[in-house]
Image (cartoon, rainbow, N blue to C red):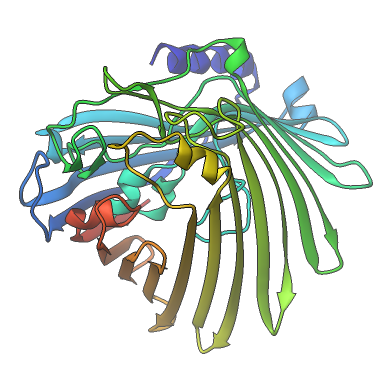
Length: 423
């Protein structure tokens, strides 16, 4: 919070002489409620989502005889005030966006401050997008906007003749928001099964220091109607997959380097995409440390087609391989969990609009034939007017094995509703 107030104060002092008038405030008021369909050991028995939310957003474009106006400077703000009834009416504020953007030279755009970062070609699947996600929001039924978490970062976009370049520096590590047992149950290896509030594991974050800065780089350009990209990321896994100290039940975010590429463009009367990435575990590049996650290779292919009459379908296939698997297997102890070498995942999205595009019906399914698990996300939304919107949906994860990605979430099934008023 101190960092937030410092940023606000600094930007205000910097730009205050350039304000001719306060910018217009927009946003929405929303109430969300998600009823649980399964029993588990989380904090509440009947629901896992019950909150009221006020989002405010504003943009200011500088004018006048000053540096920021001359460089196309703009200030963006987006923040959410929440009352969370799941935690007995706990109030909170999340600063989702507060950044200054400008064009200091003709071939470069610069954005400094809190911002949501994303790239890659996947639909709910992420290979080279190593930026932070909120999977608690994803599995409880908040709007898709909240899957992507904001980061405090500096982003420089350069436009030389041979390609476009994005370079990002993230000085403050932000992990994924994942199930921890209070709102969503999950598989806890220390407890030996799916657990809730009795989980007592300790997750260690990398300390805030220069050597722990994260860096992301993307080269991309168009080849006719196709866009190709190369990616590099130097930082940390956003999920705590490795053990720091088993006796103390400590996990940590291992350092990784990610190298990848993607191609997206017209294909068979639709849009096709392919993407791959090599995730190098810097703490265990040879795969022989049993407490540290191995390196991975991941690839996926996708296809989306508009069938007309406001009907759109999409399919994806992703393949994951844990590398150095024989070394990993040979170093396991008798009581260790053994994770698979391969994983296959298939997704399908169907979207249909009705009633002059005011009603949207959406179905998204995940299915892994190798893990024998999956996840069904369905929703129906209705734009009652320009201001009012109501959404109904369901989150239905399932799986035979408690240790798989969706199998561990099977007790978190819910149906939810969101009512929003925009202004």
